[in-house]
Image 1 (tube, one colour):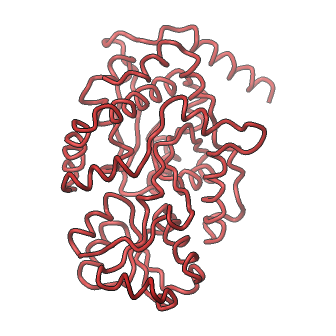
Image 2: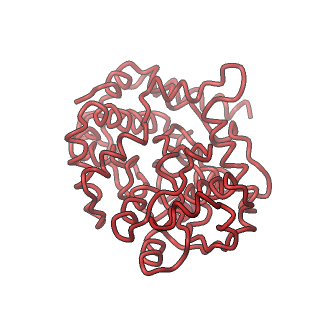
Image 3: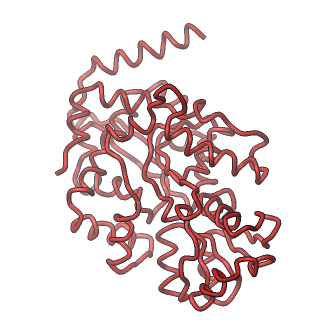
Length: 350
């Protein structure tokens, strides 16, 4: 254990001593995983378009997945190094595949929601007990289910006992609900907007409404991160620059988001894209470190992921709750802060 700690310390010392900005002809390959057409993945696309990876000497290759469960499972084969995912798969990945959380993509509590048909919303709210026995279309082991479960509980019902859970992926949910199947649908953005426009659905309850905080996770394979701390820090710096750019260039960000989503067939009016930005806060370097600071007790990030762990234990996905401190690691974000060139790069708004 002491030898492992010493080697890790030496690796970080080497990272701090090494030049940060690498010439473009000496790029290091890094494999990045994410789920397409999601707001928190937009910084990757922005970085591609702006050439920021080149500036830190990284050459990314991307692996995309329709949801978090297959994404984290792919880590077992070493098919990706770093990436972003939902908080539920981040917890699952920590428990089964030694994946660590190295930052927060966004607070997507308002973007994970339980939907119902627009003409049924008022009746449901007037008598939530009418949902007992209702068919809920949802992607299990996901933040969509976490939010839907919290919503069901907030209505005075028990999850999953009081509803009929039908496990479908997000596109299957949209297709099924649009053709009359199911009374409720558990979705995350931008799928909630697609269901609104295609099937006349309306938001019945979000994770935010039900007190279920849903963070997204910046993740890495633990073995990769420990062997390549400087690569992970550069990756984080690129992502953080994307966050700052989106905050400071909203009009252009909406345009780039439309292009990014359209590449996988998701086309939404600007009003929904603006809603993505307005309802899903992303975090700067200092805000990231604040979220992961313990301050004498659990960090805010640990509290958020602890809620997810409780949900996953209640559904039987995990045998026992996982201590969030075992997989939330602020070391790499701190390395960005402690490396002046990277900290400056991450703070840029252009």
